[in-house]
Length: 254
Ligand SMILES: C[S@@+](CC[C@H](N)C(=O)[O-])C[C@H]1O[C@@H](n2cnc3c(N)ncnc32)[C@H](O)[C@@H]1O
Image (cartoon, helix red, strand yellow):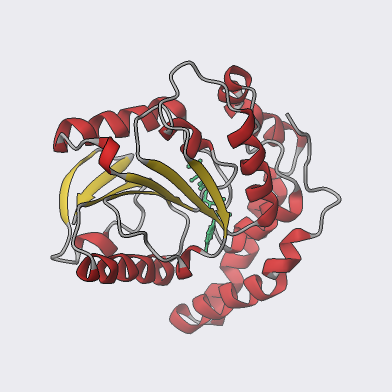
């Protein structure tokens, strides 16, 4: 497993740490005013500083069991400060917990009796690729992840090569380094996995892109939304029907 893979790497600058911070500020200031933006910034900086202590860092390594079992590096513990700071203004990298992932996929199969062999599994905001690896234990037609940060994408590519699992059923895995906002959905039946990668405006855009794609090429699509802080973006659309979930995730069908 890599250690602080990005301590000497300036890659967040390629997606603009300063620009990200500025956009974050402008979004909040536009809807809530400068005072609220300043308070939120202070609170985020405080949380970031707390999260940088050795004790908190050790806690982040608590998610490394999956890596140990499968010879990969998907822990958030080894993400260095620049990428974590970038995460403050976008969505911080955090891998999906394995037990919960399998619970979500079992629930989807039970609810829909969909045949995974017909579907492409898409993870928008795929980070180091843990959800892609776990999805490969199911017989998906193929599996695609889209990650904005080049450094996380690079680790994901290594993970796709190194992954060892006796349960692996899908071997067509791909990580793409790109902005999910501009992603062109493939014209195949889709299971879309979202673990809170985007703010409200971004999520709206991605769902609108998917709806447009479904109008152009009618087909089945399901969304599994983990930690559904912005569930209303789906529930407010009649095009989407809720088919299950718990307080940890929701599932929608197009
Ligand atoms: C909470 S993590 C989820 C990681 C992964 N899906 C998993 O479940 O293990 C969210 C990820 O979204 C990425 N992200 C944020 N904004 C993005 C965007 N516009 N396009 C693609 N990825 C993005 C972040 O860099 C981060 O890796």
